[in-house]
View 1: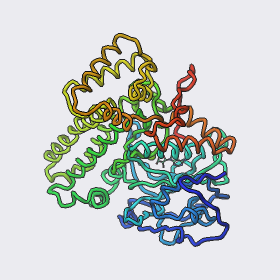
View 2: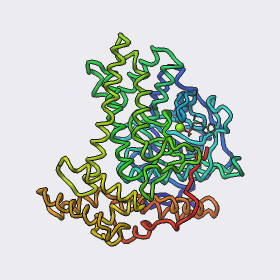
View 3: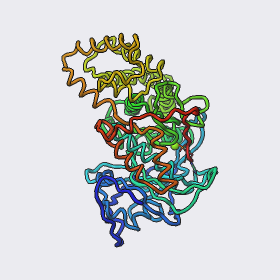
View 4: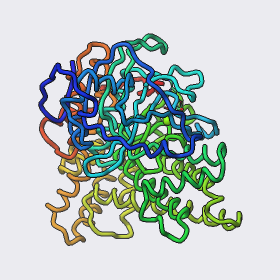
Length: 502
Ligand code: AMP
Ligand code: MG
């Protein structure tokens, strides 16, 4: 079964030239000094089969949906061959994993090239699960179907929620089994990103390469992601401030929908400000800042409530890499870096509060707004309220659906909230509209994601995933069809656990 999303298709049996699919690569990363990557040749898999293709994303990249499904192009998604103008490479990077610094690099991924869209926008096209590289260490370089489909579902849901993210173009099965605790079907995900430059890429340049290369990487990054700061007085300080700003926005957006990344190591933080590397991530059902799903996060380092602090910690590691570029005087460089990092908390807080105001239908700013939000969250935590459904019930004025309906503390809070709404110029209707646009009807709830993956991986039935994708692709629609996806999982005595799936 093959799903092609976003438009009708007819599969043609003819062979096409790869270029006819619209691949239009430039390879700027490969023009960086050699120490930043290892060039790679194909590492073929036995029997690649396309199982899902993202039609609308393909179209926006200038790719021909029909031709992408030809045998030759499926072999591109499998890494069995590359288009003429591709320049496949594995990227070198380092990173702090759970606080410990280590050398990493693409151990199971290949950047095959940078697709230039018809509008002239550049995107990395990366194959994840494509085989061993010089950075693989003990790993097999492969990935299992379940985790690759999981990344596809969650990243596309994040995109639809309006959260900056890498995206998923296709998943192919490899026709090979991989060994984890048991044999699993192998698969490769084609990932599309603004770039794969990570905090860890800068750490690699800073600790394991030369200062000259660090400067080349910083200039490359500015040119690629922040061209507007190229001429600023201290462009490396501007780079630091821009990255801080984008991360403050990103993490606030995660918090506002209850997204938990699960493994916020510095190598999994993108400089361009996209959510990257979907491993043990998941959405929170019941509101609790201590929520952790990842089986390996035994100490809760990456718990929901810790995400803003960890982001700030990671950004401090980024700032450290830039020290020699910030100022020739070490002490002055340190002051510049510390002042910049100190801005993160306020920036994050401002983004978060602005988002929370919209979730409550509030347009203007009043000092007590933060208390109003915090009182609601406190109540949600105390009564174990579902994060998404609480805001949904408030949006549609279905107070009786709230777990704390009828409680005095809720009545008092609701009175304050209504009084607050009346103190703004905007109408009740405008307020309701703002809430509908700010509170998703559906998130990819864990039990629905598991159900979709189980059907796809164990039964070969991709229909469940297709229906889930349809619903989460339009999260602010609030349609009848979505209602069934808002229901909570059957209570279980065991907490939900996610795994890295590496
Ligand atoms: P991640 O947890 O996905 O961010 O990966 C951390 C590091 O482990 C990266 O360097 C990956 O390339 C590497 N890695 C993850 N899975 C594998 C695998 N199956 N084989 C080789 N390297 C891997
Ligand atoms: Mg990673």
